[in-house]
Image 1: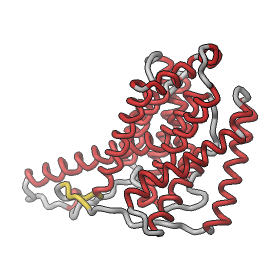
Image 2 (image 1 turned 135 degrees about the vertical axis):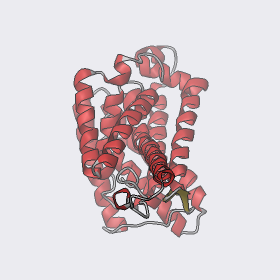
Image 3 (image 1 turned 120 degrees about the vertical axis):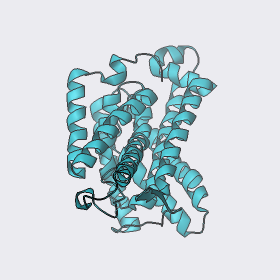
Length: 319
């Protein structure tokens, strides 16, 4: 995943090559610049993990559905965004309207045709969504071709002392923050959020009170798909899109969601913060490969200690 790996800025002069007479203030300035850049990259890694996992967290945490086609929802969002931009649609309309709406419609159709008949049947759901994942990859390959599509990211670069990073990095962070707050408001302060949370806690009780549980599940799955489509569109200018792009997201998304526990938003946010920080700091100290390995090792160790996830152990109430 672009941006979640090695630092995207490099000093004009390496610290090891600085002459002995180099002013101490300059050395301290470069060190401070590097610390600031590292901090930005850590926050970016956290935001990236949250964006790619929150759609899955909503579907899994609120519906108990293990969606192995989640990565393909991100892929479809990326394709919808890029094709819309190439068709002349405004960049931001394509990102924030076209991509989420297209994937939401696809998600609702999939929920009604496939997922709805498999609630409570975990093994069948896993097999069905895995098959759906392979189907979507095959269809995308046949329709779009097996080559990368992309668009140029907007904005330019911002200088942090002797280093530089893309302004789009801060945009991704901003999208993650706004999306998290928007979902919190939706689930906490709207009638639908109240009904959805009640259905999540006890679907039979909600049905007894007159709630159309299937309708709630359909909307919830559509929201999760829309969020995934938005995430795919946000990352498309950085990574481009291939029919197999979803495979680069799915492992991290599942690790983040499982470690987060039952609460979709709180769990995704806390897990993203922990794993993103560990991964990026390890990347800074070594390489991006070790960063990915440390992310996985951290998740395995914590799941051994906290088998019900972070929210299952420490945050049993909330969203």
